[in-house]
Image (cartoon, rainbow, N blue to C red; front, side, top):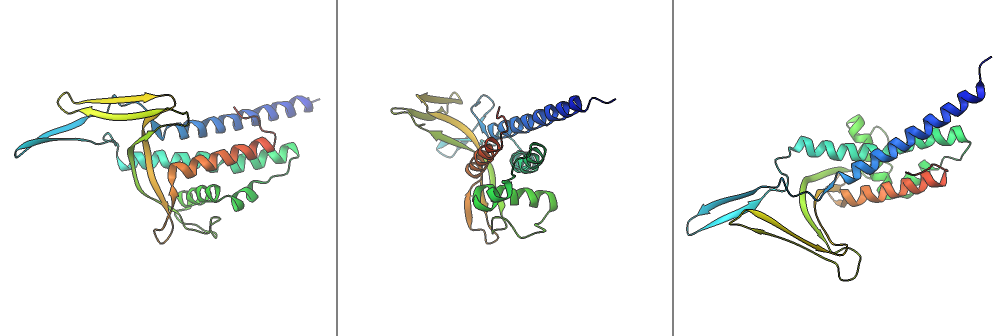
Length: 217
């Protein structure tokens, strides 16, 4: 006679493992849009009439396709939590509130719409955000933050003769290379920064997961 109880426990453990992995994938995708490693950044130097110039390309030879793939992976890892949470709630007898979250949180809705556009090439249903969002200006840029601690600071400079980058931080200050893009609507009206909206959407989904009793790694 089959051990039904054991099979149920196994399915529950598998579901926890799957959700745990999805949440960790989201965390990793979020981390990948910021980079504090400047070791591969190269400075371009040249001469002009009466002087010389130097320039830094923070894309570091990363192609448009590679940048788009990083952005697409982040959107997918955030938005797919809806379906995984829905199954979790069904198996555990919890009320699924994911659709309410999408309809009430603009950042969550924008990420959800970007995901659907990526999957279907265009939205086949009315957008949950009320917009037809798309990314524009995708590139890597230098970002300096003084952090939240009093007295914290950050600085970036370079020695053009030696070709070296000089980073300085104190307290919670940070100097990073960040994946930058604007999310715009169908009229190219800016709706917000891609990284900020993704961070807000990820935080909102984590709160929804916690409400449903999902262990957060």
